[in-house]
Length: 107
Length: 107
DNA sequence: TCACTATATGTCAGTCACCGGCATATGTAG
DNA sequence: CTACATATGCCGGTGACTGACATATAGTGA
Image (cartoon, rainbow over all chains, first blue to last red):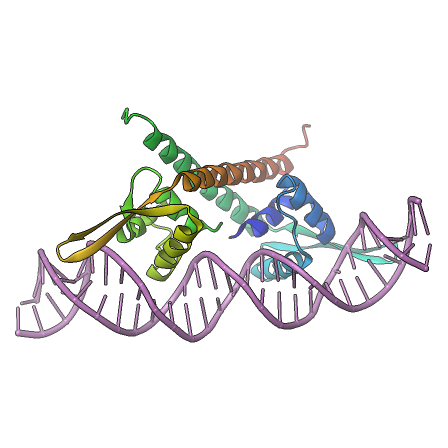
């Protein structure tokens, strides 16, 4: 799972959001670092729908504009939780090793 | 940066290793989850050399077999440290949001 | 002896997520 | 009337990763 996808799922973790709101949220979460293109966004949304990790929460028309709201499914929440733990473990290991080799081999 | 590349750099974080040893180390770090194919391995090695994140540490012949050892460059260590911090932050945010929406909206 | 596994390096075609650009439509601000 | 924010969507191209193949030596088990 790549970063844009991970951030997309994270953007849906606290509450349902529609596509455009997800894009803004992803940018906010990443501190402005990741600006999700619509190609990536709607492509990923379609893929995640088919994988059953997200589902359409609601479809409404606001100001004559369609707004499709997405939400995480239970498998989606589980996948995000698992992925978060996985990368956290990898990050810890990387940090630990970087620290260890810099030290005077205390252990 | 994708997971295989991140794990490759992590495998080099504590000490220099040659290609095949990196592959085994990556598998160990990921708990057997990620089995790096040689295509990915040598492709990534070539790419990272050109990016200046790793460099050839030593070339020796052991049992009539060539063994090329790689090590992280200072930019490579910096890149790995930055990436580790980045993904750790994303993981924290994902976990936080997953927890929050599951709670009875205490905040 | 023959087959298989481990060690060790490499190439190459194919896949798939992501990128960048474009298209479309409405409401609002200047 | 132009430009921007909102909102969704398509499409060609890139590039990391996959899976299979190739090569060579040393050790192990049948």
